[in-house]
Amino acid sequence: MNEIRLFTSESVCEGHPDKISDLIADSILDDALSGDPKSRVACEVCCSTGVVFVMGEFDTKKFIDIPSIIRNVIKEIGYNKPEYGFDYHTVGVISYINQQSEDIAQGVNCGDKTDDERDNTGAGDQGMMFGYASNETSEYMPLPLSLAHALTKNLSIARKSGKIPYLRPDGKAQVTVLYENDVPKYVDTVVVSAQHDEDIANEQIRNDIIKYVVEKAIDKKYLTNDTKYFINPTGRFVKGGPHADSGLTGRKIIVDTYGGVCPHGGGSFSGKDPTKVDRSAAYYSRYVCKNIVAACLCDKIELQVAYAIGKAKPVSISINTFGTEKINKQKILQAIEQVFDFRPFSIIKQLDLFRPIYAQTTNYGHMGKEGLPWEELNAVKTLKEFLK
Image (tube, rainbow, N blue to C red; front, top):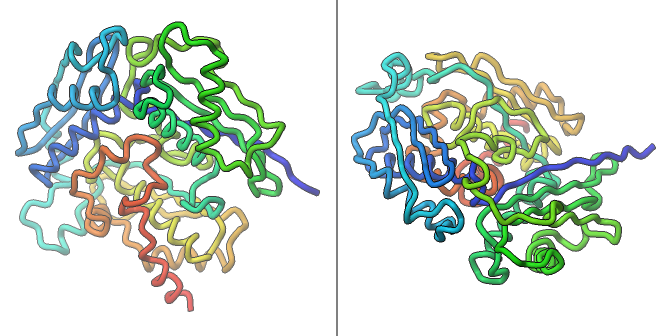
């Protein structure tokens, strides 16, 4: 008997208030790391009408020009007109920065430690992180999320290129995929909400977005005569961005990861340096899962890793292969424990994470993008050799 199910994932544009906050936080982090790779940064950002608040705990030798970074980010996103209620010319900046807690620092700082001591430096906090990979797309990501990200990315491209000149920076998308026996068959529903200028007819918005956004983002093999389109379903989306809805760092953690296909540990990524396992261990878990699937040990896998503060080795590692494993599941777990090193500073060293690479992660998902170190498939050969 065929099992039919629907699954939905969403994505948001770079001009969404929460994503503005995330990008500012990651841009501040990158600036710190560019001048001092040992920087410790935990940056939170909130934005609202005409103002950005920056809070957090920093320990860095780099002078960070926070107002300039914020204005450059807002300008690049496209908030450049006073009528948006939030623009880079006039935005106010309020910052309140403290030094990193000594209690946390003593657990993660390396100082003059040897390489072995450095690798055994503990996690900066307790917590659990998840990784996931599936062979249903070429990037080893869930199809609904991949398509939702493609939609929001194409919305920004259409706006910035002038293809749809009346678009404004805020927007979001949602894609529902029908699965039959766990295989994606077609797109059931597409939802796109795009901020726009005054006095643009809904019919024009619908036609332009389907032509320049939807049809460029979604392969026609997934679109049917029954696919439903909801384009700006409220009928109007003029007021948007922080002027309509305040934004906050870390409120789009499902958008950032796997679109709800697997659990989330609860910790956000943006604004955190890689000594925070919320970020680095989540990236490493993705790296492990992607290499496991690429090595054809299973069709999809979810991995959970958990840490205790001040301890280097995880307190637990567990996997779920959803019945798709090609070999004994215990053998896969054994391979993970033998091939991969989950100690925090080993992760940082393997993936070379003390680099200013984080602003590029902020939009359209932290996973599934080419060029990021946790997306490399350089462990596949080792996995296959281990299992011979």
